[in-house]
Image (cartoon, rainbow, N blue to C red; front, side, top):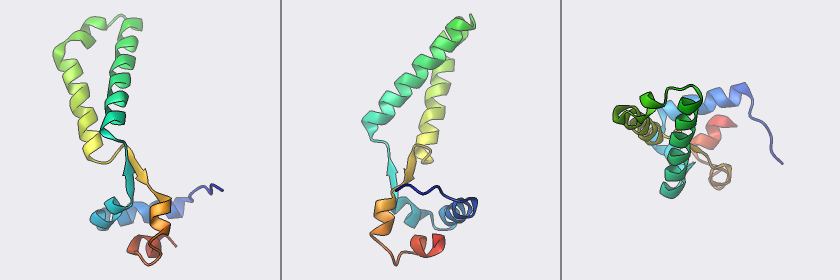
Length: 103
């Protein structure tokens, strides 16, 4: 059963991520390279569609515009923006600092 996280739990998790980033990363589950590529391709396509609707297609077609989009996407991926905590993995380590922090 899925139990929504409370604000207090989210706050504890964020504090933990900032102070124990190495351990936090052990419990992350991120998109595969293939999934990230599909997400980036879809994102670029949606941005192009928005540009077409708003008649700013020439802005989107400028190489720097799509390059900026790709750079921002890759930066977000590097920062773990496309990752989440794998709860099963956390539960496998009940004595971990993370588990003690959020319980």
